[in-house]
Image 1 (cartoon, protein in one colour):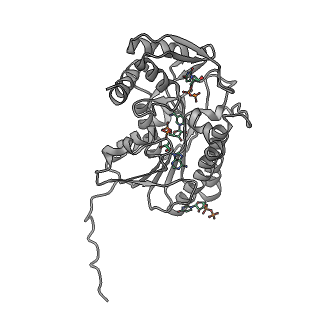
Image 2: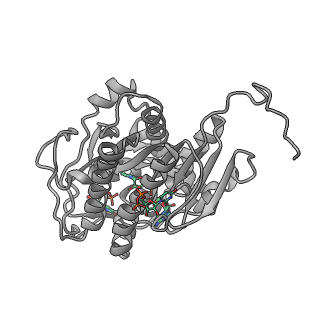
Length: 326
Ligand code: NAD
Ligand code: UDP
Ligand code: UDP
């Protein structure tokens, strides 16, 4: 029988770990894929293109170390990788509430399938969890030790409880099977490649201001959020994956807190134009305030956000202007 020659040691240089990114064609996922490709990893994006698009990853498609698969994470998946970032899940209330049953299935069955894959391949796996696990919080700012205040039967529950159950599965796969997990609780993140019509506040306000339309404040605009620029968030996700000691859950976000009315003023001052503020009903279960305590991330990852809201908004406005108002 013909024998293949024994491989010579070091034919290939030491390769960076191969990585699967689910939700790789989405807003955060596409930035993550871009950063990982630039660092020399072999990257596979898996996405069903529900809220993501091939446009977000078009610039990566001709790279030798990137490939994109159309696949729904609700179905089992077999690929051989060393690290998994599980980001697949619609993130905007408008999209996750449109098909709530699919949202829960994506979070729970998606996590189950990817944990099964991680168990089989012994890959390290990171879950994109969310500040929504804290619900409408009674503790402020939110620390990782807070268990949250979530309505289990409300219109946000498909997302909040889906993500909470995914966290449960992650920690049970760690305890029962020794799977090497990382859990990031991501707070509101914004930047280029947000879906222009996904209804999230930053993209809504920028699209409205650029079109000269009214800026829609829900409720009295006094509810708060803390906005993190996507480049800062991606850096934190990669640091969390690469370090060996902290499984999480760990809060990732920008601790600078703003009212939604302040955000509207900031967007208007940067865009200019004739838009006026208008007030609309506050959606059910809308959290009143949200601000991450990031002391764990500062210590464990030696990380904190670098980009101010004003600078991040400038980049994001430039993107929306170029894409949709040229
Ligand atoms: P996004 O909607 O732009 O990206 C989600 C991606 O997942 C999309 O490309 C979508 O097509 C894909 N997807 C959805 N269901 C799928 C399925 N069943 N199978 C395969 N792919 C599927 O949202 P994003 O803002 O980039 O969020 C990415 C992740 O980060 C999500 O898991 C989200 O819950 C989490 N997160 C985001 C934020 C934020 O502020 N952006 C905050 C907290 C957590
Ligand atoms: N799974 C997958 N890809 C793999 C390995 C497993 O999608 O490479 C799925 C598998 O189909 C199952 C889930 O992950 O639905 C959980 O797998 P596990 O082996 O933990 O559970 P079991 O198959 O024993 O129920
Ligand atoms: N919001 C708003 N106007 C909009 C869209 C959203 O006032 O056009 C408010 C929304 O009610 C919430 C906050 O902005 O209080 C953040 O909403 P988003 O959907 O971006 O994120 P989440 O509520 O999931 O944090």
